Length: 264
Image (cartoon, rainbow, N blue to C red; front, side):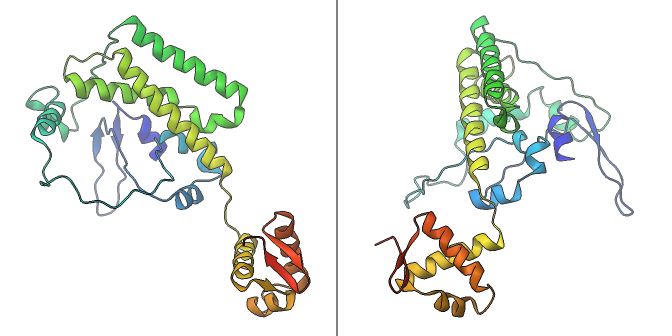
């Protein structure tokens, strides 16, 4: 349903019908979801089918590993600046005062207001970006599930920027297109890197992390000590296999009296 709604920009959508809820027709649903998460939770929730079926690349995913510094808020008012409020009001009333009346009218089919290119250079920027994306997918097929819709993302962003700058009668210029393409490409590449490098959690991985942390805290531990710590949940052979794995990874090293962390 979410994948279908993403592309239902100017068509009609019928909502689900339940025993106590009637079906409604929504014209041009223009669905938007704004969500926040941590990288670990986000990628753990979106794996496998969510990548292959195109669900993930319908999102513009922006992230950072940098923690923001604590500071006092600069704004003294909780209301939006007057100039921003005026600009948003113009977008909301794009076709005039009747815009408000039409929003909940299921009989009205909205005709899209297609913003033209402001110049040939703007159009060329878009087509160049599409070709670059296609070439990247040919060179690195594993990127396709993450950047296949980068062109659509770019033109959507460019359209939003142009409409926000000029309101009705806006045209997409080269700066709009470069801005949209830059964000879409940066986000798509970062998403691909993060998703492909993400290691899903499993029971063995949990024990590997716990044993490594335990040895680091206790300085030196023997197999018998670890066996007591896990209370028999792992056999001695499994513990030795995990220890050998950690030694090979350089996380711990063998010592005369057991195993110790390589971190000093």
